[in-house]
Image 1 (cartoon, rainbow, N blue to C red):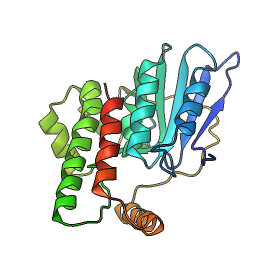
Image 2 (cartoon, rainbow, N blue to C red; image 1 turned 90 degrees about the horizontal axis):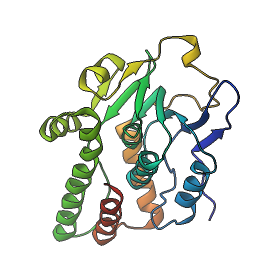
Image 3 (tube, rainbow, N blue to C red; image 1 turned 30 degrees about the vertical axis):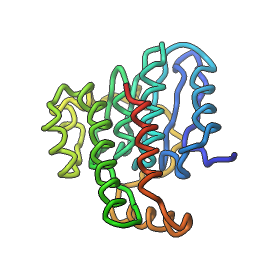
Image 4 (cartoon, helix red, strand yellow; image 1 turned 60 degrees about the vertical axis):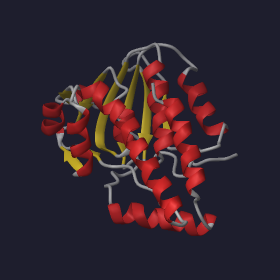
Length: 233
């Protein structure tokens, strides 16, 4: 099964550790029930040893992919440094929480918000979808809570408000440890141009996928919830 890659490795040299770039949409094609893409990511992560640097420039994407990548990085035995040079929004902000240290560029942004989906069915199906989204939110808060030390109620309110943070605000709230300050903090990033989050764009994307797949049942959404619950620790 071929999937569009959203990650790229730069092998270490004398000056730089292993470097991972996460660019663009995280799993543009959902890897739910896809055993190939997650395993490929894991194999490449563990293909070598030592500390790694992860550069993030992503508007977010698939919450299940974000959960699995978060757990893989969290479990990695080496030191993981996260550097946000563009944007880390939505699922990408969750991945960023896996770093032992998290740095943001003076001009980068982080955004957290409530999970969203599209579901089709009667009122029972809609109630299942609402419950599913609430549980997804609780799971995501686990990652934010571990990093920031903020209360779950505080984090819930920040997600409700769709909170955008520059480096100063992110440091104030505990999402970021420090700012990238010197030229040596930056390395050449073969990234795509920064992609800003747009609620309209995300909604349109979801609607297109629903049309292509004809429907997403609440039962399937609940199944996805069970998958992500098994991923969070």
